[in-house]
Length: 59
Ligand SMILES: [Zn+2]
Image (cartoon, rainbow, N blue to C red; front, side):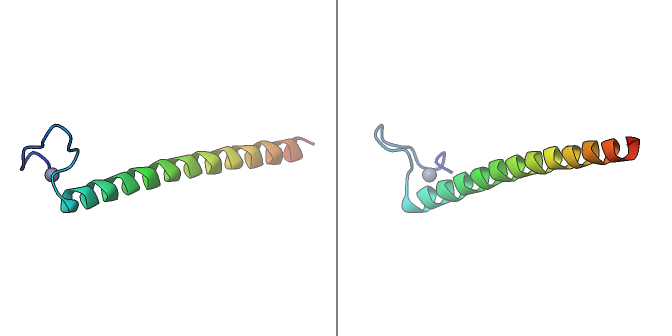
């Protein structure tokens, strides 16, 4: 993206368009991180349920 236009030292993006693209990318990263977190929680919940069910079946 920013390899197209050389940046001045103080710049982090070369254009508003680039800034928007970078923002979208970060949003996507954050969404993916959140999804990973939720999947982890679901896995933990499922393991808890299975552990509880096993206890019931043993009783
Ligand atoms: Zn750029």
